[in-house]
Image (cartoon, rainbow, N blue to C red; front, top):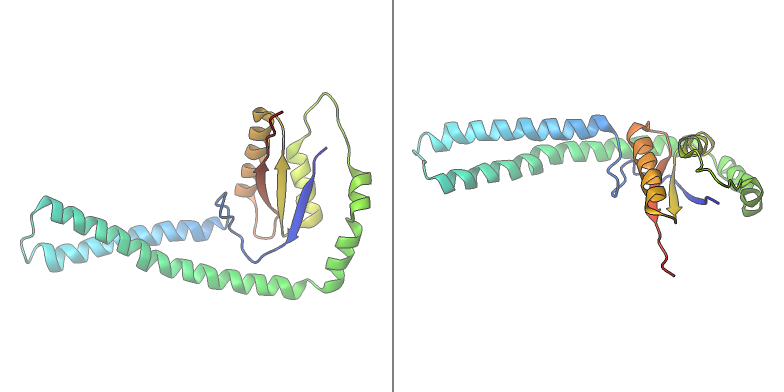
Length: 186
């Protein structure tokens, strides 16, 4: 028997555990940090290393590391800030679109009694996790769903793989699945 608990969308599209989120913003972060590093290194070379004839290897290495950190903090920080503002704007828009009656009807529709009666127990075969996650995504939409798995390591790894696959392909308004593994020794 599989069980999932879901929570309303928390306003974050990036899972801190799996690293899912909007690939455009993640790519922009990497690109901007890299370009910032190149610009900082060029400026450092033009205005400091060449004019003052800096040639000590450890000092040049220290300057290189300083440029790396500065590019991530300065240039990447701007992208993260813009990403945060964009996420707030999108989540506010989603909140406006959802009214209280929709949330109440979903809560009533999936009450404990309804979940227990709709559970299908299969013997001898492994469930089709891709179909289960797709169905949950269609039914619930933009929510965080915790998936608890208890079983052999092969079962846990196949569920984790499918969750990771779904989260990497997800769109902005799709369900975010969070994998949780529990093993009990007797």
